[in-house]
Amino acid sequence: MLNRFAETYLETWFKKSNRKPLVLRGARQVGKSTLVREFARKRKINLIEINLERHLYLDDIFKTLDIDIALREIEALCGISASLPNTLLFLDEIQSTPHAIQLLRYFFEEKKELPVIAAGSLLEFTLADHSFSMPVGRIEYMHLGPLTFTEFIAAVEPSLTRYVESFSITTPLPLTAHEKLLKRQREYILVGGMPEAVKIWCDSGSIRDVSDIHRSIAETYQDDFSKYARSHQLALMQRVFRIIPRMIGQKVKYSNISREHPSKNIKDALELLTKAKICHKVYHSHCSGLPLNADVKETVYKLLFMDIGIMNHICGNDWTYLQSFPDHELVNEGAIAEQFIGQHLLSVQALSPSLHYWVRQAKTSNAEVDYVISQGPLIIPIEVKSGKSGSLKSLQQFAIKKNTRLAVRFDLNPGNIQDVSHQINSESRIEHANYKLLSLPLYLAEKLPDILNEIRAGLPPNGMDMIFPEAAKG
Image (cartoon, rainbow, N blue to C red):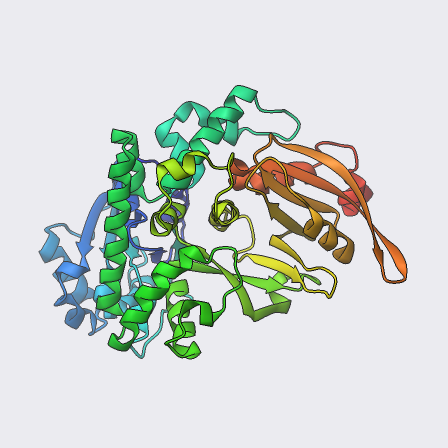
């Protein structure tokens, strides 16, 4: 059975004294239902599970918004009393009975003693067809994505997890461990993090079997669109779904998606797919201050897909093709690396809830930084390289224009931190940039917040007053 880090979050939620109903969000087939079942099984919790897709008649009962009537019906259906101690109610596929979404508010107000988890995919599709909205303030959300790389290696080669979890910028990884992690990273790029694909890879090691799973998942999503999207949206929704994986790392232009559909319709389709966590928008920010959201340009954005394995399947990248990554040039090797890092940055709760990037267009030269994040008072630019080398011109432009103290580069080299000094001739003067460059292997993307905290705490000690002057004063 695959272990998910999200179980720790559920444990904390379950023990809260003023616990709210928890809504698990995430794309279909990322493992929401399995997560709840495993959480209950391991802790010997009485689980009342209702798959609402199989009991659509319950929507009329939930419509009354009477908790007692709803619970009596649920108890009769499952044969388990909701009043038993150590009991958890799990309402799965909640989008199938929309009034259950409204009912969550009354579970919080009238049945606080009963823990309730609801899970659903494509909730936004359902809400778009109903006049009511989510019961804000009376429910809690948790987003579950595909397995991260660390969860993946915990399944395929558990002995490697300690090298990721205990990584310190002051202690180099053994070269053997680094090479093994690079090999597993290459596997993850093709297999991805969808639980069914990871499980079949662990069981059979067959790329053909993994590809069959990817095909099935992609078809399931397109079937879902026919159930939840309005009829006039269906063809466009399916088209957008299959085009997004080919657009990773590119500024979105509606004309590149379809010349046959109005821009507004394409925009609406992207909005629904974004809300449903099938894709994620990475907005351009001027990065002039915090929060980064304050000066975003909402019409300028890139997209990330929900899972790198499904992305490569749709793009037609097979195992033979990816075996050469990154030793030989691939058509979309930069996009693959950018998807890998973006997918993992989104999975890290310690970072800001959204991702941004920076672009500067000038007559002489353009510059674009793949990602920009914030931590504490810092605005941190991130460059992603698919190999062991590459130019840092855009990062240097950002460092000069924004007075950067710390920058991050992800590539295939072991981790290190170094001083960088750079200057450029700018019209009438010479501009300088002096900053710390944190270089990390791609597979350590999840560890970025911990490593930044380590640096912030004063490790390594040299140059910390330059990066964090407020720490030096303390």
